[in-house]
Length: 100
Length: 477
Image (tube, rainbow over all chains, first blue to last red; front, side, top):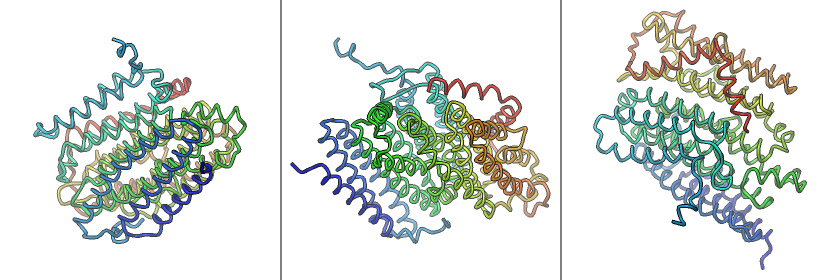
């Protein structure tokens, strides 16, 4: 059996890739995909913990995370489309009317 | 009839069940309602019905996943009050912005439902679901002005950063789950105490990840970047709603998770929260000075107020938490009141969002100026307004727990905040009106402002009632 810490290393590596992608990429769709990557990294670690602890709670949470991520995708893409209709861009740097 | 006897006891979550059903019914009824004012009225009726059920609910459900106690009921009261006031000030405003759709009110109800779940969460799974329900509804509300690029931008920024922060919350959850084998807050506390792993680096890391995620929700610096842009771009009525309810919900989970699950580690997380609170007060109060847009200024002010409320959490104990809850309750009235006046200046073809638009308001519209004066005084914390009472009890709690220096820092930042709050008062009363400013008023709007003003002044003069309520609410925590 593959030991637990391999899974945890994979999970943290995927999470870091997601964070790095979110912070460095400027295309909204790719930033959004990076967030999904972060959520899936969490899912990996939750499932492996759940298996390792022989406890179902982690897998239950994973199902909720998947469902919420689907809802988030629906709303996120709707927001991107609303922006695209007005500005014809999917680039965050062009959504810059207010100085942050 | 075996199934019936095995039905779990759901009396604890009756308010949420009623809210879910009625919000869904409203969403469908809205198809047949032409006049959207009726939808708004129904939303208020729903809030009242939920409030009625709230008084009868207590206990836990689903083996401790859902807790209904004084703490959660007090927060739910804040959410319902802010919901009703926000609906009242929305009715005319969304007509002027020509986004008069009934879904607006349903989304507000769903968002409030999410907050109620957050306040009652006894398990991180419930907390996460409540948080996402609240946040997803708010992303849509922030972008409700579909044809306005500013609103699109606000919604996009809120969405991207909100989803980013909730991923951190989940990563912290998975870590604490791996370590303790549970997601129940009480069981986590029990495990940490029994097995002496409180100083395991994984625990500290998950505490930090929770601070990041909740800090984002309450807009504490350095996780506040989204707040000014989102508050400025979102419809003003949504800004009013979102600067009060979700912030209070963020504090509700902050208190619940940190005092229940990580209660034994208070020394450690207070060490993280103290610099956070000071930075939040500094960023909020100092950056607010240079703003020219009133929504943006109030956004920075709301960041600063998150800093003050954090002091209550840092002080901890019954007094600290009670003073934090009391402060958030008062903040709901004064902040929605201030936004209510801002909304009045919005008329067809006139934004009324610049601070210079308030020049000479006292001459043209003395009543509106007087209301703004009350809310600005309250936000500054000048007696005899409620803001003073809130701050007074917060700082007293901090002093009682030995954080005298922290209270002093907060007082200094309050003094700085007087500059930008009273600048508005100065513009209104000491300058000549430049252009004719019309006001858009309506009966519901007037009611909301009257309620907010009365609450601010009454609590300011007779604070004992609300203080006792908050203390009693914390007693069962």
